[in-house]
Amino acid sequence: AQKITQTQPGMFVQEKEAVTLDCTYDTSDPSYGLFWYKQPSSGEMIFLIYQGSYDQQNATEGRYSLNFQKARKSANLVISASQLGDSAMYFCAMRERNTGGFKTIFGAGTRLFVKA
Amino acid sequence: DAGITQSPRHKVTETGTPVTLRCHQTENHRYMYWYRQDPGHGLRLIHYSYGVKDTDKGEVSDGYSVSRSKTEDFLLTLESATSSQTSVYFCAISELAGGTDTQYFGPGTRLTVL
Image (tube, rainbow over all chains, first blue to last red; front, side, top):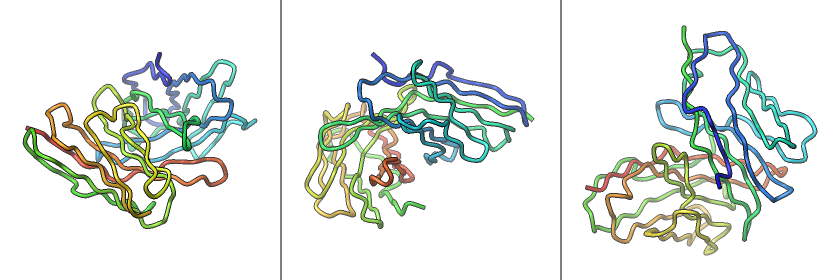
């Protein structure tokens, strides 16, 4: 079974509009972390935002927010006021405990296209 | 800038040859990771290290070995490269800081096995 699922292979959004990228996860570890990364066409992986499983409030970082619905096991990324530079691949990831420390599992990614 | 470098950045090699990729960090982070990235699969963990000489397997470890003799260096070795190991390889580091354990990535190494 997939531990991290991103159901949207590609998304289009108009510049200046908001967009939601979906992510669902599955874990039995009560203490886990959820992450979003951005990968522009240049290839680097850029950390965007983190949400801990015990955090009561949704994480926010500038124009990025994470819509955390624990009971539904979803961790959607919301980008407000999209910009052309937001066009990239976006990966959702989950960290859970493993022997010797923690393991992070990534989803397959969503490619976001921002239209002018 | 997490101070992570990878070398080489690009490599073309032939099937059956050994290949070693190097990840170097400057900030003494405890955890280091090797991932491969392939279309449709996101990033998949190959091996990781939780300290000098302490390593463990990830989900796609077959055909790969790692070594960490110093805190700052984590080496990934393909003993006998195969075409299925053509991929982009990312190194990452993390430190348990405030419980976030955020991973920061190096620039990646593009490996082509002919």
